[in-house]
Length: 248
Length: 253
Image 1 (cartoon, rainbow over the protein chains, first blue to last red):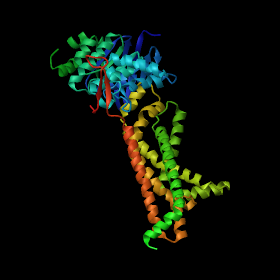
Image 2 (image 1 turned 90 degrees about the horizontal axis):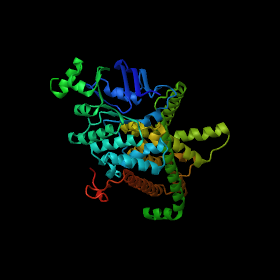
Image 3 (image 1 turned 60 degrees about the vertical axis):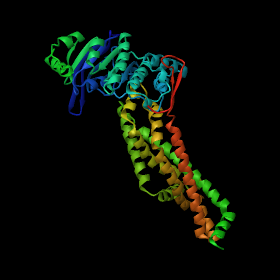
Image 4 (image 1 turned 45 degrees about the vertical axis):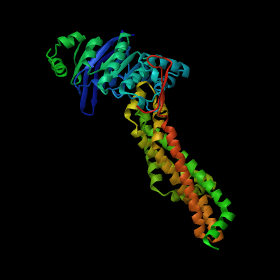
């Protein structure tokens, strides 16, 4: 066993001839909240998707508690129950109610009984403040509500890590806050989180580490204070200047 | 005899014959459409399987997909009447046994409809956004689980208008099975017409019967469509001041 949840070594991902990830090295400890920032096209989302194997890495190693997740013998499905993912577009199941959305994975993948799955789903829907809406279908919810249900769906699998892929980018501005609040709660409860985000305030306030990705590599990896107040890489400075419209 | 007297005469003497034909036609169309849909769904699931890590399985998948492509092209590309002849007489020639006509009719309609349904289902699966596949994969669901619980229920609802189309087509097109002596409505009509020598009157009655069948089927499937859509209203459990309050929301947000 390793003290790290993730150890990523030399991760490369190509789409055809297009090199998107050019060798990523990163280790993540239990309970860390890592924000990943960077311009669009820098490979942030692709990196996150490789961690969940929604994209198959072209090269390099991803170790999860010391086990290589691209090994043939590795149980991807059981791994995915431990490493949840929250998407920009929510990706809820449109044919199911809020409650069923949070139960179906437990029943089919974890083989839990209906009662057990329901109790667990309710517990986490309560936590994200969506317990009132268990009977609603996704189409009847606002974006912020959908995203909170999506978070509960991952949590209901009793996951250890959640990967957030721009969770607030598709939301109306007034709904961003409610989702970030839930995420802040989760961060404080000790869940390991990797968050690709454009919410700089969130990255600064909530994360234990911030990673700046540029052109397929990690350009800077440090504490939020350092990244936001005195970044060492000129590219980081340039990016933050463009985003925050202020000199650092 | 006037036109209407002839109609009345046929109705009196031959309605039992014609209705037995109606029964066979409905049986053929219903079983054919349902079996065809089942074939279509299975093919749809198989053809959307993600590539496997195992090279042998991948190779096998390619062969299976190739066979399925041939099946679809052949059965969509030839008339059902010709398929009926080839299968019925071909089977008899190869085995020396005549297939029971109803059974061969059911098989032919099913595999013929299956070829169309495979494409209809494929279209339905493509129309579901990729995000829901990824959402299901991200919590560890297998391809069959995500298809069965998430995708196919939505596909069924979306393709119902096309399925209804196929059903109506089957009610009418099973008439070609008279060439292998399946006693469906058209076969019975030919019998009645030659018996009575009242050709026009017989086929006027028969066309009303076909119309009654197709109309009923389209209405019934519209009803099913509305049922599958599900409720638009839902209940919010608890309000800010009262945790036991129940707020009924009757309009979509």
